[in-house]
Length: 76
Image (cartoon, rainbow, N blue to C red; front, side, top):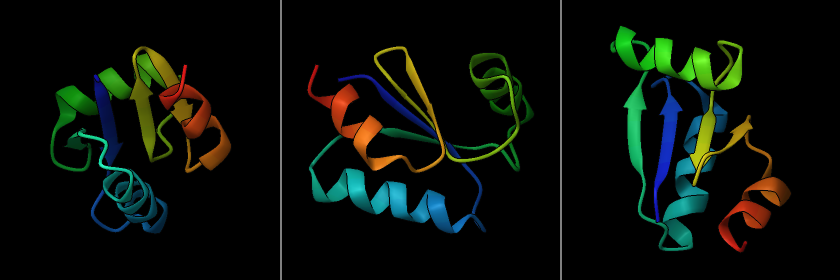
């Protein structure tokens, strides 16, 4: 499963998203957009904004920690 998580170290909702994914044993790749400008640009292109977290699940982009949307994307 291809899951990418764009986050920053100080973001509380990013921590919640990581915890949620780990609890469900979902493998993901995390990108720190505070230090990686290329990934920040990629996130901006995908989501249209700079808010984090941005979670890309199989091309479905979810902005923020939206648990119902994450569930739907993981189980489609």
